[in-house]
Image 1: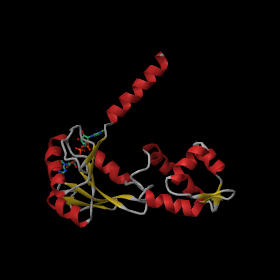
Image 2: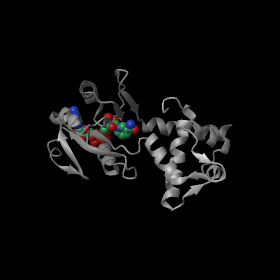
Image 3: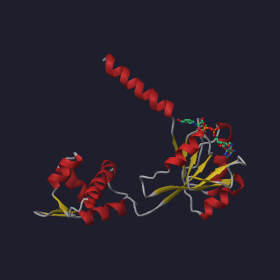
Image 4: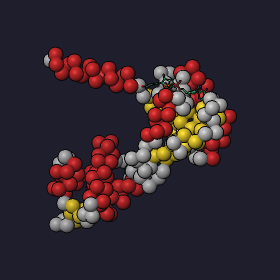
Length: 210
Ligand code: NAD
């Protein structure tokens, strides 16, 4: 069922889930579709259609059961599953990300970091062990790491990505300026803060000139 839902519906699921969890934490047991609609700013017909993809989840005159729906969406969104992420390159950017370590999200955690710097290898950085690059493949397998955050200088990135493909990594969050050719079953998400800023500047400039 999960594969058949429209993309727009799939994009709204985390919004519904976040609000339902908020209600659950506040001890609320049920919510009407009108209340939900007002809170998440999605009209109630859309909510009903979205929910209909998952079977009849609400009862007329009763509304939606908050506990049931929260668990239901958590399962669909894989929120029960912890994703262990690895990070390669514990420099300026890498250590900032290790410090952050997705603390506000209980389902993602950086479990291992890797570097070539002998001063860093063998230490524990904000709770995350730093391994040498010789241990990369073994740790990825042992810790079931599916995703790697890549924060190394660009000249080393290509060779590392080849190793990641070889060991069967599923996704790479790439902060280096390099762009990689990877097989279809590996996803690369490129993050470029300069690009983001330039986009922002573009929109600000156009806002003021049009
Ligand atoms: P940095 O020099 O502070 O850190 C790089 C780290 O990688 C160091 O700890 C170094 O020991 C380690 N390293 C070097 N070669 C390695 C290898 N072969 N294997 C494993 N680790 C290795 O650099 P930084 O300022 O943190 O930048 C890191 C990367 O992020 C660069 O590619 C930079 O261009 C990029 N960057 C991207 C953005 C962005 O918006 N996308 C912003 C800042 C930096």
